[in-house]
Image (cartoon, rainbow, N blue to C red; front, side):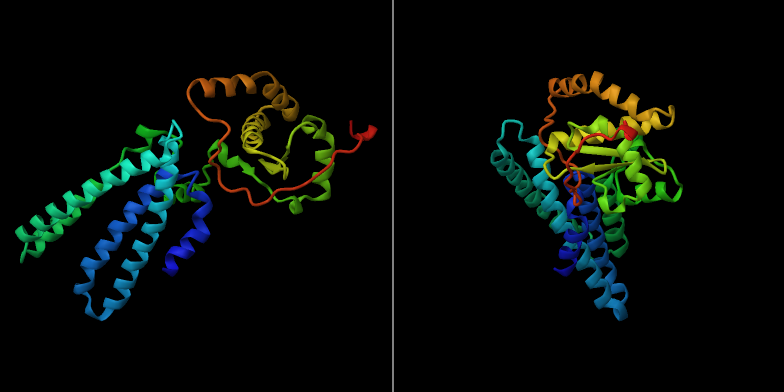
Length: 285
């Protein structure tokens, strides 16, 4: 129980934005818990520790599977029929569980007294259960399990979106940052966000009154700015021009393809700020 609470505390804000990944993690942790149960009789001296680890693994499974199920249900409820989708999904899960129990009882009867057959059956079925397409087949920029992104960090390989920090903390701003913001503030006068390019990254500061559409626009703006930072010194000007010319067309095409831009499943933005624009100083124009 405590493991589930801690997992929700540390990863709860990421379950919406990475629902597919955490759904797979839930299945993996469930299989890991069953593996612990099978290993426990082989190590009598460590029985309690192994059983506790298995229970901890399944507690992660309960939180992650329940939360991601809700996120995926909302995704498939195209006609705002989340209850209908949830009911049908629950019925399918019940049928699958009953079928699995029947086959499991049959397999247990067949493999009784044959330890090697039990292990071969468990490992082969687990591998089949966890088989997924490779990232190249799904998306070249989509990680399937959390530790894959950790390996990229160790290798210092960053994808474009990892250069953009959404919801930066205003207290991190130094005096030099404030001077840079004063020079570029004219680009964000009518926006509920502003961008700061710092140390090769883009920090996005979100206003307290920002809504989902503002957050989406700020993130796209940040991606565009990160791209122009590598090519031009007047990156803010070119990024602002790109947003003026192409952003509305981009959003229109998303809507035509069926995407809902009013609902954004990004990670929770903890830090928001409030600011008021005063008159421009002639020195900073």
